[in-house]
Amino acid sequence: MDFVMKQALGGATKDMGKMLGGEEEKDPDAQKKEEERQEALRQQEEERKAKHARMEAEREKVRQQIRDKAALEQPCEGSLTRPKKAIPAGCGDEEEEEEESILDTVLKYLPGPLQDMFKK
Image 1 (cartoon, rainbow, N blue to C red):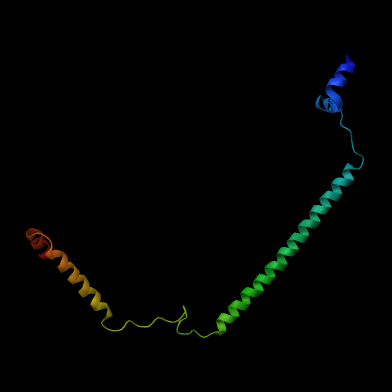
Image 2: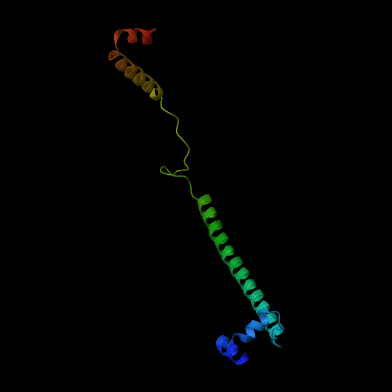
């Protein structure tokens, strides 16, 4: 019967023993391999951080150049940062007159009682 079970399960009998609580095979170099893997991960992380620091330093250098360039330039006529000009006299009055004339135009088309109500 043992032969039949081994044939039916194939090579899985070793794994069956582990699942049922048997001892696992221990790799004598497992500890050393794990330490090497951890060291490789630490080294990769340090390299990534160094690369990130270099890239950020380059970005800051470019930002500072842009700031310096903007500080040296004088605002020109088409610049978005130019000071606003004062509104010429009479510009604000025209808008109010237009609004009144629009209101008068609308009142003309209303029925008589509604016109009287709005005029009061």
